[in-house]
Image 1 (tube, rainbow, N blue to C red):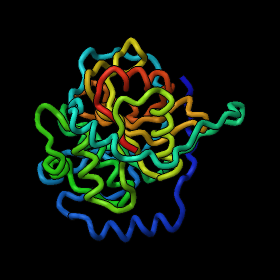
Image 2: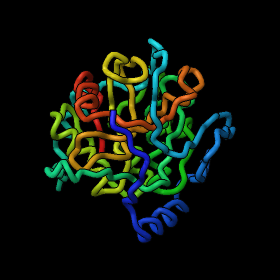
Image 3: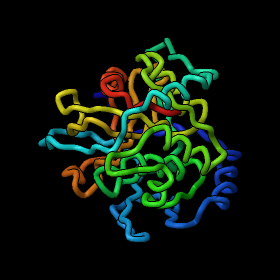
Image 4: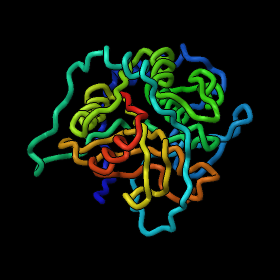
Length: 273
């Protein structure tokens, strides 16, 4: 597995100003401030426990992989897929063909991974991370879950997209379902490199494929990509959840594009960028 520990800023001073201005318009209930956290600290907010983690890629090493994992993502319905198909792609960024000069492109280092607060809140946790990055503030996960229609069965990507687009005006998310491998890579990379926004992807992961656990339906953030689209940096809200058995691990790690593609195509959860 290729690992990298260097950030490349994908935003400028104008974007930072827009984030600050838009933050003032967000619902202040259950707000988590965008502070850099370098130690493991937990804060209680309206009966929630949330963790904002500084995103650093770290070697994973050998671990004893738990069999179980989160189940918080719901498969797309026919109507959701039909609605998403009506939205044009726009301009997508194709891979940098000069692989010898490929480099990492990241969101700036204000991006945070939030631990989900129960085993089916991966959707609200990834939405929380996106809102915090785009606006500088965010409601808590209970509030987000209500806005996204989350139940104990999980969350639909379509509802997460609608909520994200209603809560901020920095970036309008587009949902995609059933994308092939090349298109999946184009979407994820474009979200980061062109729109400066965290992409969100639904995955079915298996430990035998190189993931840290097994899960049939889970959402993760995508905050970094190689310019040749060969690898992606993921923010995983399950890792720091107290019931995961993985709280000593980094919540951010790198996976090859093919590994992500297999996990994405194994279940119809979709992605948004």
